[in-house]
Image (tube, each protein chain N blue to C red):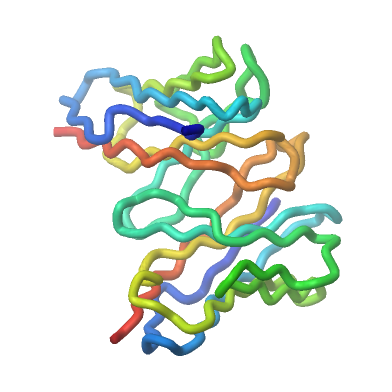
Length: 116
Length: 114
């Protein structure tokens, strides 16, 4: 069975500093996709970044980068130069293959608070 | 603009009543999903559909029902059999049921049982 583990229920970071949100995963599939979503207090789910299991380079999207360590089964999100608007819940997720419905399996989330 | 529309945004229900949450997408996506989120928790899959007229149970399907008669629409009914229906419900869609490509989410429906 596939599983996502986020061990940091809450994190604090000073504005303009970088922060790393941890994510480990478990799967027996060779092909999989890893995602990070941001959920502000309004409740919407905002897609941040994607990493494919066969991608050799770490994904980057603006201030977001994904530190992908396949052997350790980790997919940590790095946010550089934190902003007050980054305060939100962050979810790591893995996407199952088509024969499993292509569903997203989510971790429990990490609540990030950015201090001014 | 293309996107996913969920309605209503807020819904109150008395115990013993069924309620239907609407989810409509104009993204021409084949796959659609319903998730439930409880306070401080991650999202759990209720039902999903990869093609019209077909759907599958997710991890917590008991007390819920769905239909997929049109590509654009995937309504979720919360029945009286659902013991603890108060939650935030999110609908999502995707171009493919494979493991690439993100899921696009609606803004959610917050259901409260009185």
